[in-house]
Length: 148
Length: 148
Image (cartoon, chains in turn cyan, green):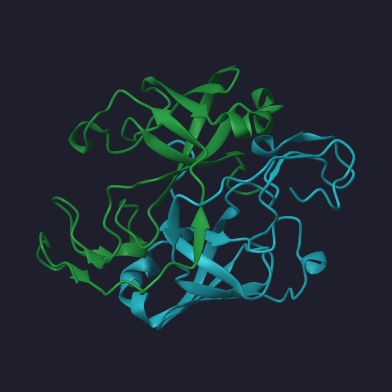
């Protein structure tokens, strides 16, 4: 168990011996932020335009996407540790991982809602992301409103 | 390439030779629906109470979750094929996978918004799910409202 860099109140568990399923990286996200410290705390549709580039294999899966103004984007937060059950975010109280949206979680899958600005071939321009440049894409879905 | 059971207009691609990252199943979701045909098309907070049971390893990560009335739940749709780029859902037009919320997608990760009814030890009772009984859990996060 890696207990380096634990903040007061944080608790790590031993990770399972193996993973249970595999995911494909299906594209890459380009943003203005090269290191974690530069990333905004949360994305805003007033923020800069970012570019999602889909691998050619999956390009046809974008068919018809332009009619959806808002999209849900899932991506992989590869720099985050996965073994914390209690966390103490900067200047906040300790809380359970599932009571936080921190990148640190057993499966570091982020979910962001973005506004679609333009589609060109296998590239989407969107607003609302807050991730590192080079982040790997997992999925894009049309947004479903909170209540529907 | 598995081209069995393709509907008119559907297109499959060859999947990559290997996956790029691994995920852990961190719990199980119990619902009233035992086969896909029984599942509602989309979950509703007027629907039945379902139970999410977290593996003991991760139980402490629920600390403080009761103060979040609405949660985002990520789970793994293990029965879905992963190789379709164009799909023809039942009684609908053909569309690209990323323009649909169908379970069929390169990474069959579902995202549902649920209402938290009760917490008891490592079990959460929630409303709003539409998945099969026995579905494996990937993550729970506090809901983030659409615009914040």
